[in-house]
Image (cartoon, rainbow, N blue to C red; front, side, top):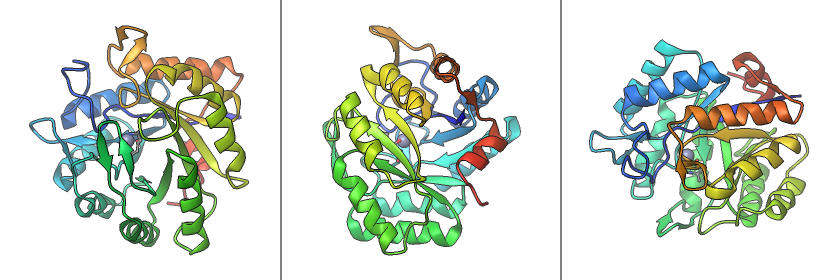
Length: 270
Ligand code: KMH
Ligand code: ZN
């Protein structure tokens, strides 16, 4: 069974002071994504930064980044609508108007590290409905038990179409701890036929990515999720993390999905 590897080169929080190899500007992100594609990643999960490296939902920056990526490789683009903790929901949601193949949908508000991640129910419903209208496939971010229930309610209300696509996010301070028990308990509760991946934040990244792959999930790799390749050792860019995930796919006896296989596995209809 093939596994889709997503590269997440740049998250909402880290800066170049945390890891000097963090790509922040459009051409840096595009170069990192193209390297990851050549290594085997089929999906790129994107956060954008402005010229001061602050998280932004500026559609021009997003468009420019997507175009630079398309010049370099045919990887599938997934825009983050999480964007950054201080960016208003109304700006974040506009990103789906660019009609990426996929975008994230964060179903609930929560504490997030030292900050607050605001996803009010009415706004989430509006974004889910708009994504459905535009044919942008939502990746549902599950940071805690009740987030899955919130997604199932959206499905029951006709705002999400099956098969559902989930990220099980482990290790955000404010969400589930990064433990195998939490991963297993969440996987067991997913509706039959769901597509899912593990997003393992911080130290448990390697272990939980490996467990997710062994259980049949997809994998995500990159500096958004961990700045380190080993304890106390910064990753020298996204590539070593992507290569590590690719090696894990082989180690559990699976093959790496190319873009065409990923379109099939993720059941992308446009
Ligand atoms: N930053 C991760 C903890 C999103 O961008 O919308 C989850 C994430 C969600 O990637
Ligand atoms: Zn993200």
